[in-house]
Length: 141
Image (tube, rainbow, N blue to C red; front, side, top):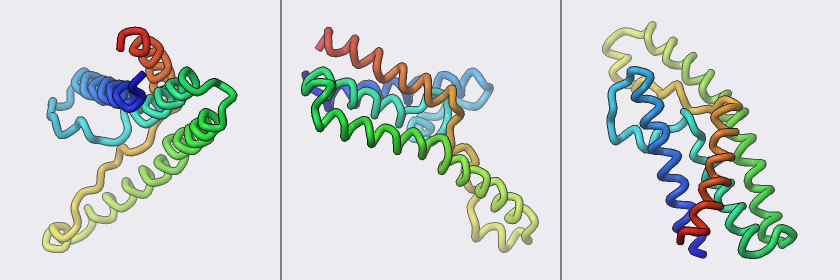
């Protein structure tokens, strides 16, 4: 089993899923959005779920390596749901402050992306996608 390849495929599928859901929301399709934060599904959650599942399958569910992956997964999910949502609130505030500046000063500060965090459903779908797609890919590859 090629754990790196499977995890990379799962990440790519999650990112492509984001492009599809953003396109449905009326936003213009751009390949650069492949590397954006936030959105449905969470590619961070999908990737760590894929890695954890692959390690569990190859090393055993009671292995120390699987335990490490689970602990890292908890940190990543916490980050996606809490910390990045705090950053999102701060980004909105900074953009609001920027809008009140003179145009000359505004040009010195770029507009900050306001969508960097995830909702619970985005993270859950990412986790499920990571697990299920990994189980499928381990049978195919």
